[in-house]
Length: 299
Image (cartoon, rainbow, N blue to C red):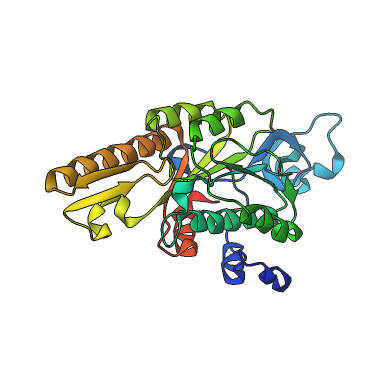
């Protein structure tokens, strides 16, 4: 790992700590839990699954002779073969993610690097798809922990782009003929068409999904902005400005709208068994990812 630390995105401490967690990432079951991906085929794989009665043609080395001595019948050990899991990281780099300090995009980079490092460590294939106004499919898949520096390079060089459209990016991705795996979508999920359009697009993606929602404390409570009275807001992407008086009624209406926005995303995750992490871009990324793993969302 020492050689990797020369890259400005690579935090050696972060990478070393996330490696302690189980590295097989795939969604399974309700509640957004993550578990290992296995093939449905039975064979002489890596993990014991069950016993079955011996039939002609079974490999003799699979016979469990301890059971034969106890029962007088031949049984063979059956194993499940584990597959490398394709991990697709959809990384939002729309302009709205760059306008704060610390920026949401910086948090997105560190999160993507940490999750990508986990997958590379276990020889899973990682492919990055940056998106803003359109989906970028130019990066090739990476596999093996020696590719960590290359992954960091792929995550580093992205400029803020106006006119973002997460629904178009997800719809385009859903049409790609890719092997089924885990899709990690890292975004703030703000979209001019509304959350319903985003959820419809997510439903088209026929992969296991982990949603990383990039947040800031003032998203849920605008009082963190420490602003009052007449305030001019500027859209970071369209550059449209709006003058508002931050009255209690305006704050209440905004807070209710944001709560509804979050409830829609959370309900989708709960209903579909999709993993969801609300990542505070102002907080410690490693601590938040650690909490994700410690809750049992990674097996």
